[in-house]
Image 1 (cartoon, rainbow over the protein chains, first blue to last red):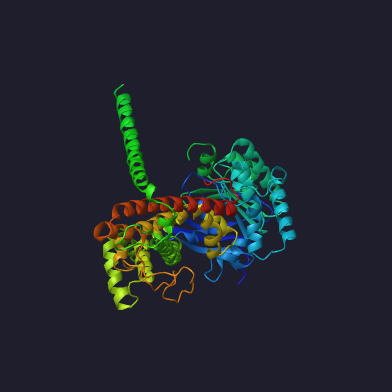
Image 2: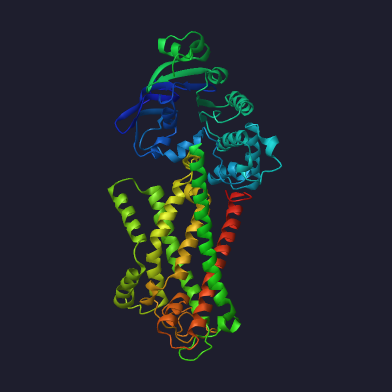
Length: 255
Length: 298
């Protein structure tokens, strides 16, 4: 079955329909290992919808229909046979608004691993500490792990959500505008974190902020009206885009 | 200038209405308590009622109200939660669920006397449960279910979608997400709903006249075997609740102190509802804090 064009992780002719409206149109994209791919484009261009289809989050939306293939190590994630619940464990996700569970800081992190079979308290403690350290949050919260996660600041909550995503050891991290609700300092921390984390995983990030895309990503894809207009090295795309529309967008002429 | 005046007038009117409502409620409560509190003593709360003589109490009625509440909630809460969770999390949006929702809405505004008559025909007569706590509890459950289902559905729908998605993204099953992530967030609303439903059990008389009956057999409070005829917790015995008792004493009571008994019983009923409210809220807060590790309900 394996063809030479099939990406390790990426999409093949992936379309998303809302009803009859094709919001994402036949996207072919590959997300290389240990790198950050940024998805940019004006609001409503389908970049978030595309991102959400990668871990089958659109299954939850009754009117949405995803057609095409999502490849991950030779497996088509969009196949009806593929169990969405287990695949999502390998693909972490972080949203625009921080959404910690209404639980303690500790429980936010320990919840996933415990559900997936780690019952040992020591091991859980270890996972909690490691995940928080990787999300650069450990030092700020290590003395208040039993407190509610909702008592944290927005920026801390967002890093907690990243730590939570890391707790089940995903191979891929999907970030849907992870810093757009944060202040500049917190944004900086999250960006540093992204650059740090890409040493170990694939990261796909949707962002409205082109400076951010330029700062954190290795390659950037420009979406417009559901089409993938251009996907190239970030430096190349921002300095010398090959498509006129990309050029106009990054120059700020529209969007 | 004109807009400012209009704003001031509107604010004044709104404040007036708010004060009016509080005043009505306060007046009502004050009146009932003031009239009744003098008649409440230990004897009144514990001794059985009299049919012809003065000096009867409301002991069995008080117990019946509480026990009926427990029985009703045992039926209502699981069914209501199940139905509400189904409507919020599992049901697809189509004609059928639209129809179910319509039925629930209609049922929730159903006159309770009709529910009582239905209970009389079906549970008391057809099923042969007789005038019994069980018939009453089922009738009240039917009466309360729509409320419980609606509140549960709304409570679950009000949980931000991102909470659910966060659970999905961790690879949790739907059931785990519902029980461990959504339920704690929805809990405060569910508790409010349960209190509302419980309040209706305390206060309901019409639906109980034909189902749990208007009499209470002599009870033996030392016998807790539910199969014994005189046991207080026998669900197949007839049971007059406090609200029904108040109605009966006022409408066809032949006791000379009917006024005093109904005043006292009304005060007890009001106090019970208030107490139940406070205890349920306190309990809800404790549980909520425990499972969410938060300091306050938000």
